[in-house]
Amino acid sequence: MPDVFTYPNTFAWYSFVSKFSETKRGAWAAASAPAASAFKGKNAGKSDKGTAPKKEAAKPKPAAVAEEDDFDPFADDPEADAAAAEAMKKKAEEAKSKKKKAAPIAKSLIIWEVKPWGEETDLNALADKILAINMDGLSWKTEWKKEPVAYGVFKIQIGATVEDDKVSTDIVQETIEAFEDEVQSVDIVAFNKL
Image 1 (tube, helix red, strand yellow):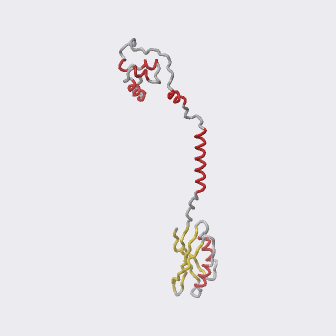
Image 2 (cartoon, rainbow, N blue to C red):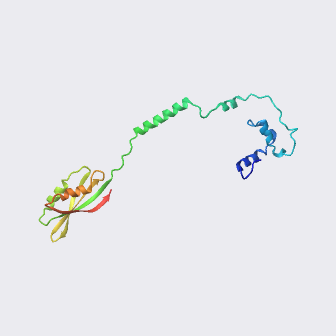
Image 3 (cartoon, rainbow, N blue to C red):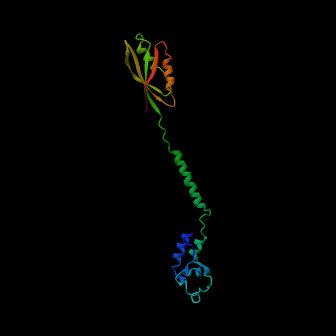
């Protein structure tokens, strides 16, 4: 009998199997003569004289059992392999045919504040020059605002939507600052991701 602490699962199996009579255990297909006599269960104290199993001639296995024994789950099955290959090929074609959704383009809404040198600067002409700046991924808002600074000097607030991968805010700012005769400074007032 296995030790309950060392082999608890084996002990549980042994206890379960020992509850069956020897004739029942002898009828099991996997039971052999030595294994059947090893489990005595309720008959543990009795002698084996009257209960020794008789040696019988080997019986032919029924056809269903013979087929089951011949089954090899790891054997090659050309039909199953072909069906699996066809299914994988079909799945790959479906994946190719489906158009993947394009990732959303990262855009930002930026509002620049452009301060002129003085009150004599023509803000309409300056705004037209800024709106004429053309870059791939840059789209200007059509309206701009004139905000007072001090002493009759006004500044321009103008917005644009930019594609983050294509346009750098620094490049746009430097391009506006390139109008040196009209522009004193350019600052970003608002920067919002869309």
